[in-house]
Figure 1: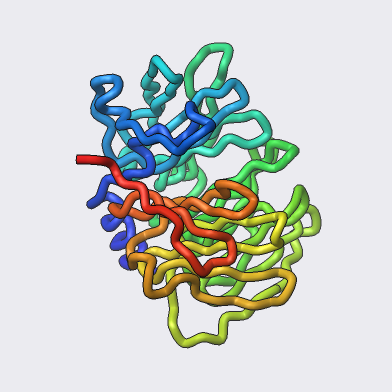
Figure 2: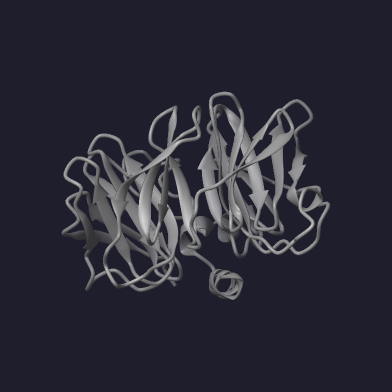
Length: 297
């Protein structure tokens, strides 16, 4: 499992994902417009892994060399106060009006708008004797508790106390919110609904297909009650919570490259960031590629 995870990490790092070196229609509501951040501001941003927008309209993008904050005419780069070396990847999430950055090796930081800097919240390396783990994902709930998906299990951080929640899987898995009380936990073998109050889970889909895959990103479409599942090398899947149908989407069209991000673009379309392949727009029926956006030479 560890060697497989490290192999996937190296795949991520060999390519610069086009999605996150562009400003994507955040400053142009009438049409999708792509601009190279490097060209606009004369900076060099490489191996950028995630992007989000805060309540003030700032666009934030993460890389292991710093956190980039963008407006339509200005930028700023913040450094994270690392305690532990070995950072390969940094991700950002903005939930409950809080901006959080976290690393593959278990360091979690939150942005303090008063001091205008990122502050260390947790270093998992100080909690485990075995440093042989990877972070697969992180979410914050309405109580500002952290839910951390590790290669060694699911953990909750509450008031500085770290609690392990057994999820009984040896596969790479990913988390997303179903509602304020429930998580959806997705891996190759199953999809489960997890109650964050009772810590009980139920399997809502059991994968009986022979082909295995590693989940890289998921997106829950609340309007359609459908889960979209991006993989590292097997394309895109969808699971309808209404019908229980699990299918591979546009199998012959979507490249077998890591799908690093999936976001709703409208009530009828999705955007996918595919490593080295730009941004793909598809319809939510899952039967048509509408556009493929790449940086012009």
